[in-house]
Amino acid sequence: MGVRRWIESWPVYRQFSGDDPLGRGVAARSAGTERITPRVSTADRVVKSVCPYCAVGCGQDVYVKDGKVTQIEGDPDSPVSRGRLCPKGSASLQLTTGDAREQRVLYRRPHGTEWESLDLDTAMDMIADRVVEARRHGWQWEQDGVPVRRTLGFASLGGATLDNEENYLIKKLFTALGAVQIENQARV
Ligand code: SF4
Image 1 (cartoon, protein in one colour):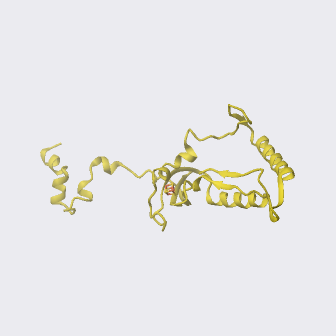
Image 2: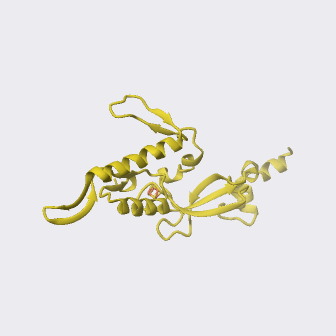
Image 3: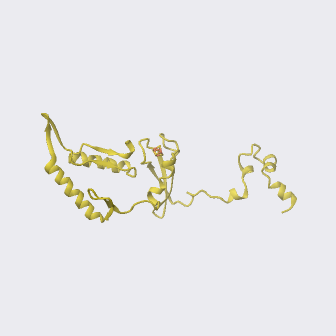
């Protein structure tokens, strides 16, 4: 590189000789910066969503490529968060792709000390049997003369990876079944 080109490569030279006198645009960019592309530039679509982690409900842009989530960022169009996400929301890509995400049903028997893996059909049958049993033997039509029509035999505690629509359906289902204690981690 000649001396002239070397000097021209200085940001301060480009700032005072070019069209960027404040040095906040092209003058401040290095060759390395020019080679960088946004990590969302290869996505083939963006899906609007809501961060599931807490009750603030920040808006998210979910970037998808070939049917897989590749990045999740704050949604600038959201009136709630205006493009911002806290560290939990910023890391929510790991909910879909992280190595620590559990893909199996895990069950710990009463008084058990170890988790065991169950296939989904077995787990669903166990849950259905217990719901039927709890309603059959624990149903209350009234308490102290007041109609209650409920069972205290089961409850629901949802996790933070449930989205709004799933939580809506869970609330409807458990209320219809007679449950009273229906909560989600986002409200804890
Ligand atoms: S966890 Fe963070 S990003 Fe998600 S809704 Fe709550 S404040 Fe917003």
